Length: 324
Image (cartoon, rainbow, N blue to C red; front, top):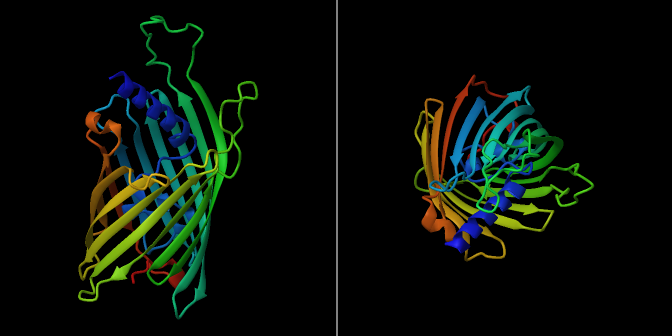
């Protein structure tokens, strides 16, 4: 039991140090028809003003496990550009992070006939990181909390993300660099990582069924690399999507995440499903933790709700949502 407790504490420290350290945790939010989660380059692609709200609870059953809420809004301006905003609130034990991202994307046509498009995107990030001392409790060895600990410790940071997106019919490939600036740290302690840069690559293809024009298959891969210590992980995903003649659809899929040096030891794996009906969107995702925490929690649950409205066709195909 002591080993499990230590393992949980270690994981919380890792989550505090990396998932919250100006890097909003990416689970499967992007698969809920919300690519804007991953890259600012997707802002404005589509005919609608698009809103997506995510609620995520990790490791249900474990006290003070990470909890996250986020809101994404993006829409097209003019024919070739889009803007977006992201708001998020992330709680992990006694550490709290809130932030906002303001994004801009510009879309170019490489070739009309073959439907090849190139997009560039940039985001400005403002993050606030705080330690909540209200829940601090004494331990058996030190039953009284240190009286010198007063006020919530907090800090803010500004940063930028940059991304590129290439699309060719149903194929897509995006590459992003997040947190381009180094973090200001306390020169007297020297224990904080000042390099928060991480890279993300997201690629896949939408394949129309040969037997049914309204059925679409979408295999995809999401890769993430952290520069500070060289950690990297990969998601392997698959989605099945079925449309009707009115443009509504439902989909189902599965995601498999692993560290790149441990392919046969997945971090988590789980199913997901969603539906779009009359411009209202709903999706649910479940992730089963496959490490030593499996016996102490019921997995990670995520719900996405959304709305598309103010539909307006663009005169430029580079901002059109492509199907194979």
